[in-house]
Amino acid sequence: MCNWIDYQGPSPADVPQPSTHQGSALIVQNVDFEANVLFVLAFLTSGDGGGKAGLACGMLGLPNSTTMAPMSFNIVEECIGSVLQQHADDIVKANLVKEVRQC
Image (tube, rainbow, N blue to C red; front, top):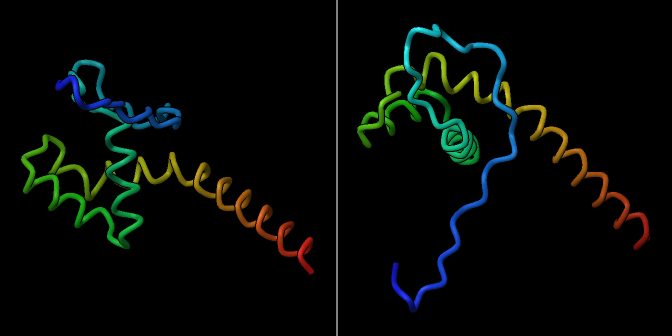
């Protein structure tokens, strides 16, 4: 990199990998789970689902474009759902406490 830029890479996603849906041990898995988590979060944030995520993977030439819509998107969504729900509950509770203190 350039000496003028203070580059700091992204922090890893703190989501445990699923213990199910591992597939065959004989097939080499070319999956970066953290990248998939961020990809799924981006599509959930924009209001799109697995179908659009699969199309984007295909246009980008990514290896899991054919499995993103029917399988991968839902697996990642199941794993991060409880984490998202816990963060949402914490945020709502903190905002409720602030609102009550102001009243």
